[in-house]
Amino acid sequence: GRKIYRTTYCQIYYAQLARTMSPPEPASIQGESNKLPPENARTMTKSDSSSGPLAVANILISIWSKISQRESPSESKTAHVRLITIAASHYCEKVRWVLDVLERDETSPYYYTEDAHPPGFHSWEPLEASKGAASITPMVIFNDESNGNIESNTGPTALWESSKIVETFLPTLYPSEIADEVRDMEADLGRRLGPAVRCVAYYYLFQDLEKYEKAAMDIAADPRKMSNIESTLWGKFLPKGLANGICKSLKINEDTKRASVQEIRAVIKEISEKLGTQEYLMDQEGGRTSFGFTAADLSLASLAYPLVRPPEMEYWLANSEEVPPELNALTEEIRASRAGQHVLKMYKEHRPVDEQHGVVVMKYSNRNRSFFQWMFGY
Image 1 (cartoon, helix red, strand yellow):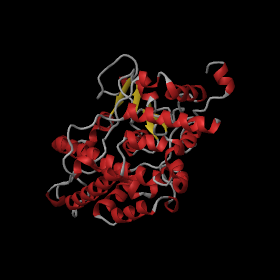
Image 2: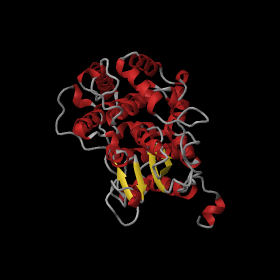
Image 3: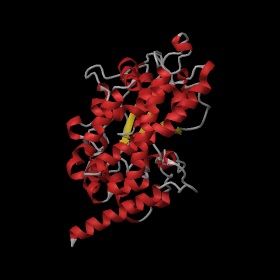
Image 4: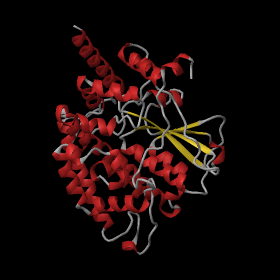
C-alpha cells in the first residue's frame, strides 16, 4: 500500500509540474519547424506550489538546503553575484562562461557563487529572488552600484534571460559596428539550437531509464553541484514520474525529437558554411575584417556543448560509455563539421578553466543544512 501511495503521489506531483510549466499551445502548427519544443517553459507562480505535492517538495528542500556564498578569491573581488542555474543547462553555461571571464579578469570586481538545481526543482529560488517576476534560469542576483553599465537601483538586482545577462556584464562581446547582427545571431541560436539540443538530450536519456539513469543523474543531479536533498529527491522521483513530467512540460516527444535532430543539422550546416575559412563567426570579407570572439561565438559554443562534448566540460558531462549510442553518433557527426570544430576551438582558446584541474568546475559553497542549523534558524 505504501509503495502504491508513493508512486501515485509522485505521478500527481509531476502531472502538476507539467501543467504549471507547460507553455500555451500554439494556435496552429504548420510544417516540421513548428514542431520544435519551446525555448522556455511557462513561468510558474507562487500559487503553483502553494498546495499539493509541489508544496511538500518545496518545504523539504527549504528545510534541508540553504543559500550560501563563497569567500572572495582576492581583495580586488568586491562585487558578488549569485548565479541561479539548472546545473546541466547549456543556457546557464553561457552565463557561467561570462562570469568566469570576469572573475579571471584582474580589473573586474566581480566574483560569483553558483546556486545550482536539478530540472523540475529549479523554479522556487528564481521566483523568490525576482519577487515573483520569473521562474527561469539562468538568473543573476547582484548589487549594481559597481557597474556603470547597469542603472542604479536600491537593493539587489535580479536579471534573467541569458542574452540580457551577457550583454549587461560583458558588453565588449557586442562590438558597436555589428552589435545588432551579433544580437540577431545570438537570438536565432537561442531560439533554434538551444531547445533542439535540450530536447534530443532529454529524449534519449529518459527513453530507457533503467539503462541510462546513472548518466541522467551524473548530468542533472550530481550531489557535488547541489544540495543533497535535491539530488536525493530527484533521483528517487526520476523513474516514478519526474522524467515524464519534464518531457510533457517541455513538449519532448518522438515528433519534437525528430524535428530537433533536423534543426540541429540545419543549424550546423548553416554555421559551417558561414564560417568557411574565417576564424570567428562575425568576421567579414572572408576573415579580412575580424571582430574576434563575440556573443555569437559564445552562444554557439555554449548551446552546442552537450553534444560536442569539449574536454574542458568533462565535469559537467557523463562518460560517453554511459550515454545512449544515438547521442554519441550525433556527437561524432557534429564534431566532424566545421561548426563542431569551431566549438572545440572556442572552448580551448576562450573558456576559462580551473588551473589545477584543467577543466571548468563549479564555483559554489556548501548548500546543505544540518538538523541543528534548521533547528536554530541558520
